[in-house]
Amino acid sequence: KRHKFWETQPVGQYKDVGDTSLPEGPIEPPTPLSEVKQEPYNLPSAYEWTTCDMNSEETCEEVYVLLKNNYVEDDENMFRFNYSKEFLRWALRVPGYYQSWHIGVRAKASKKLVAFISGIPARIRVNEDVVKMAEINFLCVHKKLRSKRLAPVMIKEVTRRVHLENIWQAAYTAGVVLPTPITTCQYWHRSLNPKKLIDVGFSRLGARMTMSRTIKLYKLPDSTITPGFRKMELRDVPAVTRLLRNYLNQFVVAPDFDENDVEHWLLPNDNVVDSFLVESPQNHEITDFCSFYTLPSSILGNQNYSTLKAAYSYYNVSTKTPMNQLMNDVLIVAKQKDFDVFNALDVMHNETFLKELKFGPGDGQLHYYLYNYRIRNGLKPSGLGLVLL
Ligand SMILES: COc1cccc(CC(=N)NC(=O)c2cccnc2OC2CCNCC2)c1
Image (tube, rainbow, N blue to C red; front, side, top):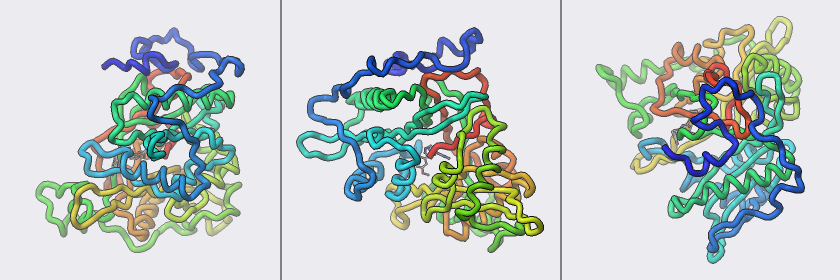
């Protein structure tokens, strides 16, 4: 398939796949800042750029409503992500963020927000290199403005603003295949409320299965079983940072989290991110960690339900508690918190628990991309230690 836009960008091109003569690392060198385009790219004349101040309740609401009505849907258009406002503030106002990277497009006449794209700064390690990158996310064009070729100019504009901060690499994911994924992940779902999932068409009743048999199959204990399993607290940040950095070292691509990052990304934040750890009752050592983020989806066209309450596996570390036992406790907590489903990608060591804990494969894939950074082909999802929101 021709990618008119992506064929012009410093990303792995299809023709390069398998060419082992190409060196790993940046594809293009940085441009002198004086040579970076100083003014914004041109939009079609009816539209104008706007910078979205996510501290403003009004602007945050506009971004929320745009995404709620126009962001990613599943392949059968039955569900649409419904990121909450507090989630968006968490995802975008990160340590060291640039408000100029929270980019909106307004219709000049109505001043309505009709498109959005965001970048946040992140330190990502690739093999032994720690690279300052932008994580690009929430690219959304209003349904009524699709195929006006707004996305390419929005991608160029966020790239230009990232370059102005002397950052030359980026990381992003997509459900579609573009030039060229660094790896492709399968997503998996663990039913927590099978009756609702079947009612809304997220799951189907298994062959030769009754509803009551299905409910029994997915039943979980009322409480967690691991001694010392508890919610993460601020005082745990140093220990969790050590545990997580050590664990992520084994993956080819992973965030280079410091304590400040861990405090932002992993400290429990109601209805946004939940995190737990195991503190050994004997010597009070923190031996294991697990976390998930809250991303509900709107259910499109169902009389009885409007929202699917979904938890998404985030970062999990097991050094003493078996991963399956740790993750089963996470499922128990998610069920206690009334989640309908627990989702995970087959990244890191997730594959071990996906099969054991009654996850079923989803019907889609999530592709990971790096911008202006080539890595040796053949990275498996199990070699990836980066979870994007
Ligand atoms: C259930 O409601 C949905 C609403 C919209 C899309 C999808 C399917 C889908 N595309 N799922 C994922 O991308 C996915 C499945 C498992 C884990 N993480 C995921 O995506 C995350 C990470 C990338 N940005 C979106 C959230 C499902």
